[in-house]
Image (spheres, rainbow, N blue to C red):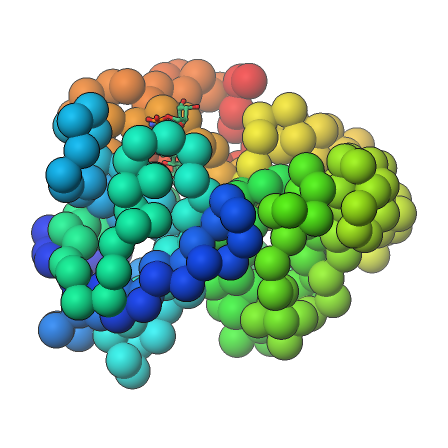
Length: 256
Ligand SMILES: Cc1cc2nc3c(=O)[nH]c(=O)nc-3n(C[C@H](O)[C@H](O)[C@H](O)COP(=O)(O)OP(=O)(O)OC[C@H]3O[C@@H](n4cnc5c(N)ncnc54)[C@H](O)[C@@H]3O)c2cc1C
Ligand code: FES
C-alpha cells in the first residue's frame, strides 16, 4: 500500500558536524510521521542560494517515530548540500516525503549491507528494520580515507561493522569488494548503496553465488515524483523511473 506523500516544513532541531564532509540533520514534524521505510528518500527545498532551483534528493538515515523526528546524513558536494550544512536549529526545511520504493525485507537470516562513501546513509534504518525482523545485519563500509569516517556506534549496536579505506588509513586497505567478509559464504543476500562501479561489483558477486541483491541507485533526479523522466533507468522490464520504481532495485533487473 503506498503512503500519501507530504509536503511539509520540518523544524531543524540539530545539525551535527560528523567530519569535514558529512553532517547529520535532525528534523522534527509537528504531526505524526507517515510510515517511512529504509531506502526511501525526501526531496529537500534549498533556500537562499543562486543555483539550487531543483530540490535535492536525500535518503532517510534514521527515524524516531515517538519524537516525530527524522535524521538525514549528508555529504557536502556542491552548493545545495553546502547550504543544507549551514542550517541551524530553529530554522525550517521544506521536504516532500516519503518518496520511492524501499529495500525489501526478504527470506533468509544473515545479510551484508555494503556501502561506499555517503551510500552508508540508508544502511542504518535498513539495519534497524532487519534486526526488528529477527535477522542479522552485518555492515561493510568503504571510505576514501579516515577523513570520511565518523562515529559508527549506532551501527555497531545493530551488528558487526567492517571498514575498508582506499588509502588504508583506517580498517582494511582496498575496495569493499576485496574485503575478506565478502569472500565468505555466510550471507543470504546483499544490500548495497554507493558508486555504481561498486554496486555492479557487489551485484556480480551476488550473481555468482546466486543470492539476493538489492541496490539503491543515486541517479540524478529533478522532480522526484515520476513526472520529468530525468532519472530513467534501463531495466529488463524496460525504462523505469529511479525516483518512483526505485531508487531500490533488485540487481537482476538492472541493465547497467
Ligand atoms: C535517491 C537518492 C538518495 C540520496 N541520498 C543521499 C544521502 O542520504 N546523503 C547524501 O549526502 N547524498 C544523497 N544523494 C545525493 C545527493 O542528492 C546529491 O549529492 C545532491 O543532490 C547534490 O546537490 P548539490 O547542490 O550539493 O551539488 P551539485 O552542485 O548540484 O552537484 C554536485 C554533484 O552531485 C550530483 N547531483 C546533483 N544534483 C543531484 C540530484 N538531484 N540527484 C542526484 N545527484 C545529484 C551531481 O552529479 C554532481 O556530481 C542521494 C541521491 C539520490 C538520487
Ligand atoms: S526525477 Fe523526475 S521522473 Fe524521476
